[in-house]
Image 1 (tube, rainbow, N blue to C red):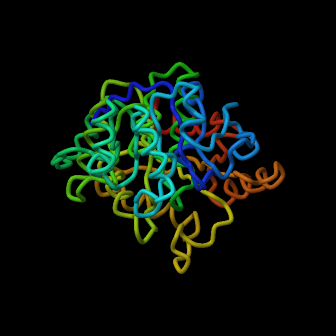
Image 2: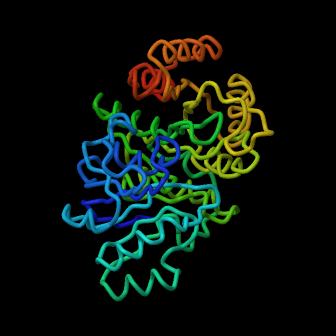
Length: 350
């Protein structure tokens, strides 16, 4: 469960997919581990200023190949994408071959296990490098029993109206604000990007379905002595492909409060263009309904993802979310988490 990722000079591989959503793993690592990132590896954008593509990114170069990055002394390549199906794109393989051949380790959050790839495994062994498949949870066979309900730690789960709407970012920003306010707060990583940022966790979507709620329970046990934990949500209860991992987290975590994450303007679920997204009010009610049999819980606030919107559009979207739900709403990045955390604290009593 606990990954040891000691690397502190990271080369973020996005080859041809650099962008807020198209390389969301890389973008998040750049945002939350900026001092550990030495460059972005993407031949299509080499030489361009990174901040012109990713707002708030550190001032590091974009390079075309591994050879151009070696002068920056990287110690590992991080695969910065999370594609549907989790396979390694052919365009990225050549960079991994070059990197392993130069002694760089590889950190992958893909579904496919790169450590079992004969070519890459042989290169790693020959050049003293390692391949870390952070999505591989190991032999988890833990059945959930609702143990989280008896733990000291207060549990806050971010949930979403769809995939890729900012559940991890909301949890990280809530933890940051909670720590600023003096709380003993933990972030619980349930996906590959969160693990890369925090250094430990379980990629719950890679656990056998019978044991996925148990994996969530194990994660909460890992921070059981803390004051409050913010658990990174996955998928969406209305998503036809990924609802199972969402339900596993709701029941395994036994949250004391939930924060709804929402991306305004989306009409259909991610990668399912014939599956409309239900209204946010309906989804809030649905999350509360599915939580109730195991551990009754309320959605107490809305984290609104306004990436790409003008300030005026963002303000309007936040006001609309608050008006429609009757809950405090804010964009955690633009507006901070003060109001969101106040609603959480009022519910969980810390």
